[in-house]
Amino acid sequence: MSWGTDLWDQFENLDKHTQWGIDFLERYAKFVKERLEIEQTYAKQLRNLVKKYCPKRSKDEEPRFTSCLSFYSILNELNDYAGQREVVAEEMGHRVYGELMRYSQDLKAERKHHLQEGRKAQQYLDQCWKQMDNSKKRFERECREAEKSQIVFEKLDNDINATKSEVEKAKSQLYLRTHMADESKNEYAAQLQNFNGEQWKHFNVAIPQIFKNLQDMDERRTVKLGETYRSFAEVERKVIPIISKCLEGMVTAAKNVDERRDSALVVESFKSGFEPPGDFPFEDFSQNIQRTGSDGTIGTPKNDTGKPDPKHTIGKAKNKLWLFGKKPKAPNLEDLSHLPPEQRRKKLQQRIDELSRELQKEMDQRDALNKMKDVYEKNPQMGDPSSLQPKISETICNMEKLRSEIHKNETWLSEVEGKQGSRGDRRPSGDVNHHAPHGRESPEGSYTDDPSQEHRSPPQPDPHEFDDEFEDDDPLPAIGHCKALYSFDGSNEGTLVMKEDEMLYVIEEDKGDGWTRVRKQGGEEGYVPTSYVEITMEKHSKGAVTYI
Image 1 (tube, helix red, strand yellow):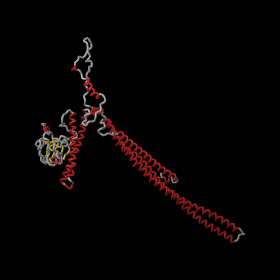
Image 2: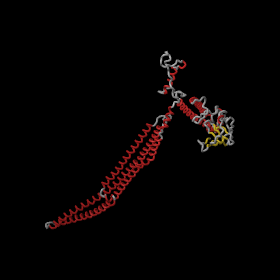
Image 3: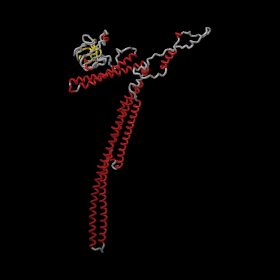
Image 4: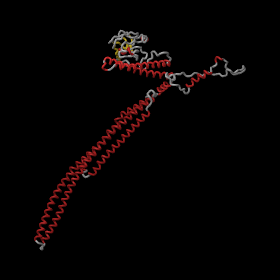
């Protein structure tokens, strides 16, 4: 069906309908805008909710219970869910609302153009009709005047009293009016023919084309609405997989709640390490009462040696009372002796691990500075080597302070664990052995006791450090191989002589003290400086890396 043929006379109604279509499109755009604003508000409120309930304490102070960790995981998933709601709002704003508003402006301009063309065609047809109507009225007027002139001429012609001049005058007036009536008739006929032609063009060509353009515009508007309806749904569908993952993450977090593990953490967190108190002794206050032999009551024999010391008993009881009630407040001491043994051990171990990590950072910084100093010495144009010495000295000083702190805390830890002296074979979890040999050095600039002696002498390990390492009868399996970058004389006990470019088997990794245990192909074993070799670990061994 075509608007041009079926609705040829409904210009005003089509004007109203096309305006309604654009208004409806803009109304839907407003609906989308309010919807995306709801999504934005919802996402913002979700993020604020997550922020409100996220822990504000440091990671060390956060509870490690599975119920808490699962709740934090749910908060993270909810935060990701809020992000997907923001994506929905953004996509709706770009793909639906923004597109609709741009299209609405285009429709308004196109509709205005088509309606202007229709009005111009109607105005031109009205103008043709007016010209035809004017010629018609003039023809009618001239015909009436000609009829009057004919009546006057016939009256004078039949009047015997009329003069010849009067008759001739009436005759010429009749001729003039008749001629003017004929001219107006011809003009009217021409104007009528022209109007009929323009009217046919108007209703069969111009108006159908204009209405067809309006119909195409309205149909495109309808199609566009359908596309935006689909986009509106696709925006939601696009985020469903990610939202599903967020919900699956929440379910997984719920499954990770372990009541037994939480109970074990409670024990680990609050276990004091004290033994439960023993029975309170009976305090007999009737020792000084004189009893007669006939007294039938059973008395306690007077024995000064078995008499309990009330002061000692009461003092002992007082020392144990806090186990059953509120624990007395104690000052925070540096050695953490105010804590129960188990808690003190944990805190000391954590402190040692942190200091070990700081020491490792200082060692890495020192090595990097020494390497830079070597580069400056070989290439003076790149920098002044002496400018790095203050920083190197400061780093070495920091390392000594950290080693001192680690040794002090290890001593306290040994006391807690019932050991005396240094911890010996204990290695902190920071992967740094703080009982390293004194006076050692590597080509990259490892630590020496005397900073002025760096880069001059080979390592000098403690001759007694490796005595216990070779007590095993069974040889250790090789976990990798290495290539000697420099020669090493191995003058100290427990070390191994190696030549430059010599290939060796790695049987024990560097524990953080700068020494690696290797074996020659002939079976001889010993320690060499880690910085003297290029190590390649086997793929199947744990921590397979390459050291240079």
